[in-house]
Length: 221
Length: 221
DNA sequence: ATAAATTTTTAGACAAGTCTAAAAATTTAT
DNA sequence: ATAAATTTTTAGACTTGTCTAAAAATTTAT
Ligand SMILES: [Mn+2]
Ligand SMILES: [Mn+2]
Ligand SMILES: [Mn+2]
Ligand SMILES: [Mn+2]
Image (cartoon, rainbow over all chains, first blue to last red; front, side, top):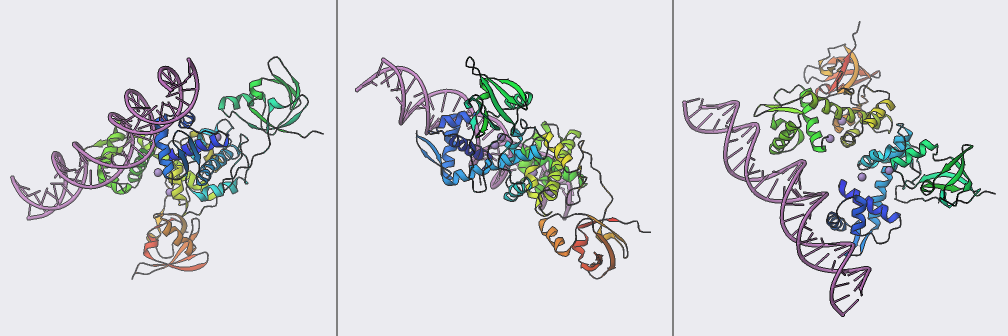
């Protein structure tokens, strides 16, 4: 059994690994968790003793198989709860994260299994992030940043990179949401802004947005 | 804002008050929470400073209005979550309490409001206990212990006094659940056992059961 | 290769919450 | 009214998790 704190460290390390970081150092973890390196140092010792990770002094950490499973299960809970909040309790996608941060620590295997059933076995959370299965496996779909699409290419909006409340609310205002079809009408070389077609309307989006929005390319023929 | 520990103390004191205890002493609280008197003594000081209760040395504690509201809100959350688990996630009434003990501490006013809406504004939890409203008011319905009914009287089963998993499972086995009509066929003076009619079947129940089951008397005419 | 800058660890302190053991206050019994 | 029993408080210790400041190890620059 893991404490709330241990779970949060585990999750942070897991996310760093999934995001492809190689040297997951004390400092990297401290930054991710907005805490101090000395605190991380202490916690690494504890987690290492609990055999969820292997630590090589001054080298960095790596989750064990057990560690990955444990962390993935927390992420699974987090994302299932987010689906619940949006689908059943009418939360909008920018309101769910904080509450899910709390709910992810509730301990009850039956609860999470039944929630999964109740929600109809969702595969992705409201931000387009994949929900790990019971064994902790992540199914990643192929997706590209909107900024990588070429003129006249199109695809379906399937996720966000930055899922801050500010960005999500901004997308809401622009009428951009997951599942919508987007077509690149034009690319502006000057500031890398895009002219896109969404809902049969023309819209101009900045490069910053285009770098935070994931699209599943239509294999357009 | 209150810590998990503070919330559990508050809830314990609230339950003692609702159950009509007068001198809610350090020892009484310690017993309820299966902790030590010295720990309670410390916590009472803290809660007193936070103005949720008034403490008179060697006399006992009394919740302030603010304390009652705060505690009732935790109980409200606990019972709404229990309804959710039974109604939506197919938990049985003997499985929900432990999980609700965790869920009751999740902090999100919107969550609990929306949960209330989603569940259809339930007034009672799966054990027949009333759900406090947003202001913390408890609506108590009139109910009597099965043991107080007279021969030939009947009523609807509306609650349990002992809601331990063992007792609830025992009731399940006997086919007794909330909402069912029970008629007293006979009372045995020797051991205070009862012969009752439920679902058109005759059943014998011990005095111990009769003292833990609440009935809403049918004003039989 | 040595010095400088950076990263990591250790040492010591603190807050929350708990416990045991002893002291103090209160209640009950004689 | 005094003694005995009980309740409550205090004192001191321990755990978890955090922090600051300093020491140690490592990496980078010259
Ligand atoms: Mn999230
Ligand atoms: Mn968390
Ligand atoms: Mn309960
Ligand atoms: Mn609780």
